[in-house]
Image 1 (cartoon, rainbow, N blue to C red):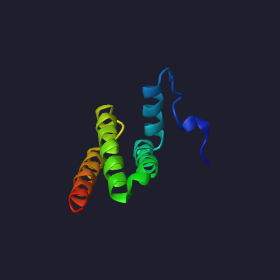
Image 2: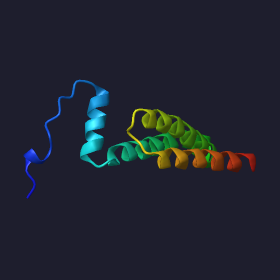
Image 3: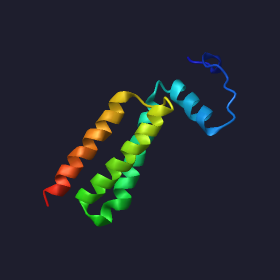
Image 4: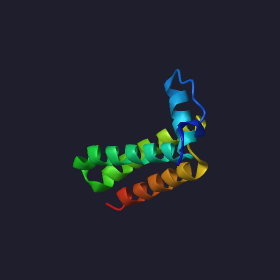
Length: 97
């Protein structure tokens, strides 16, 4: 049974330290989950403009956020590449119209 002493007590004083600590405790899944949650929220918000446009807007905004999160060290390279490819794919879908 795990105890509270398994993790070092963090001295969190700002949002970056909190996100970094949460990412270290969850084995880098916090940043990934946050990124996909942002994508889902943006897709639902932009859905009134059509599915293709919503996918393009959500993937582009999430790509920009993933680049910033990668610069902070909260996200791996593969997720930035994934959202770059999703953005390129969605632009191709929009050009098809």
